[in-house]
Each structure stands twice: as C-alpha cells, then as structure tokens.
Image (tube, rainbow, N blue to C red; front, side, top):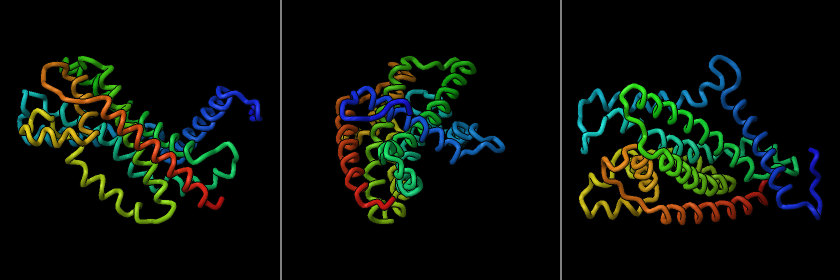
Length: 265
C-alpha cells in the first residue's frame, strides 16, 4: 500500500486504508462463498430472490386475503427478504472469525474488518434482490414504492441491528461452540416475532404495545411505510431502533476486542 501508518498518520488516512482492507476482504468473501463456476456471483442475489419468491408464491396460492386489501405476494416477499438479511448475518456470525482467522496474521486486518466485509456483502446481495422485486412489482402491477427512502432506512437499521447481534455471537463463538449450535435455532424461533409476517395494526392494542418493544418490528414497519405510504397505518420509532443498534454495536465491538486476545494466529 502506498499509505504508511505512522504516529503522524491522519484519521482520514487510517480510514481510507481500512476501507481498502474491507473492500479486499469483501471481494475475497464473494469468491469464497460463490466462486466463479456455473452461476457464480449471480447466486449473490438470486438466492434471496428465489427464497422470497417461493414464500410469496406459497401464501398467494393459499388464497388467504390480508387486512387492508394488500397483495399477498408483494407483502410476503417484502417481508421475507429483509428477514433474510437479518437471518443471514446472524446465522453466519459463529463461523465468521474461525473461517478467516489466518487473515489476522496481516497487521492491517482486524476482526472488525472481517465481520464488516461479510455484513456488507450480505446487505448488497439482499438489497439487489429487494430492488429487483420492487422494480418488478412496479412494472407488472403498478405497485411502485411510495417513499423509497424509508425502505432504504428500514434496511439500513435492520443491518445495524443484525450486525450488533452478530458481533456478540462471533465474539462468544471464540470461547464456546454453543453459539454455533443454537444460533440457527434461535433465529428460526424468533422469526414469528420479528415483524416479518405481520403488521402492528393487525394486532389487538395490548399486543401492539408488546410488539413495539421488539426493535426489528419497527424496521419492517418502516419498510412497509416506504412501500405502501399512507394506504395502511404503520407504527415505528426511529430513535428507539437507533438506540438499540448503537448499544448492540458498541457492546459487540467491545466483545470482539476482548475475544481477539484469545485468538492464536
């Protein structure tokens, strides 16, 4: 690298170098996970598209209508794909460090860099899948997003929440294999509570208050507000989610820093 870190290195120089490191790790992760054979990198966004489409098609075929007259296929697809982002980041966290531990031999590669590169790749994959579906819904049935910015905000907040949890899970996995064994089960059990498959206004008033104590519910409500606008009522509290995301990420980064001392490179 042309930049050499020294005692007088500026914060901006350090930031640029770390962004290069994260970019290189992201490209490496793409090659490791998807390779260059057959469909290769296309699976990056094809996998969440296929899974989201399958979920939507199954519920459409069931013939059940939704409150507010919502299109079942659109609702279930746009519900499942953000959950796929959350699940993908958290479920892959237990092997995030172990699978890339040899990279820590390089002085400029940190545990945080490794985790960030994996999360950015997941976000890019799911983001492309969601954009493709939104464009398809708009072109075919004329159901364009009312406020796209809110969809982006909801997805970014979902990324931040999932990332904070993933940091904690990855750090815990350095000490015990228990996290690897229970994380997948926990995310599936949590699926029904995330807000992926219901809207707050569908619930009785007492359950609405309970649902809004779960930060992911606010993310889904944000995404649906961006999709439907004022056609259906939505309830969310952005500062509440930001506070959760900040707390989880700060705790997670502290846990990663402590776990790094126990790694043998």
